[in-house]
Length: 65
Image (cartoon, one colour):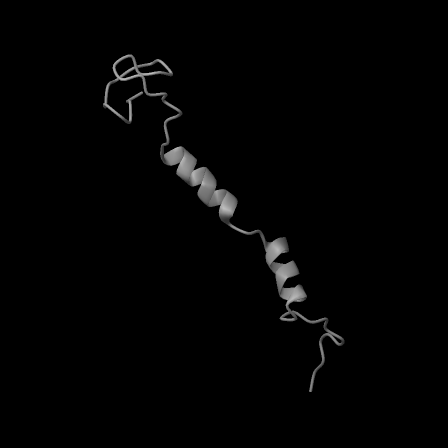
């Protein structure tokens, strides 16, 4: 891991050069996990639409002229 303070490479949780605590390494995997967790599912969107009155119950199905 690289120390965010002094850029020293170390495998320790605390940098031996400057004493900074290295919390974690953020990479593209973390970004993709956050992105996929932020996408609402179809059930949540349907509930929001019903709650706002955008989706109403259908009384008759298949009417023809």
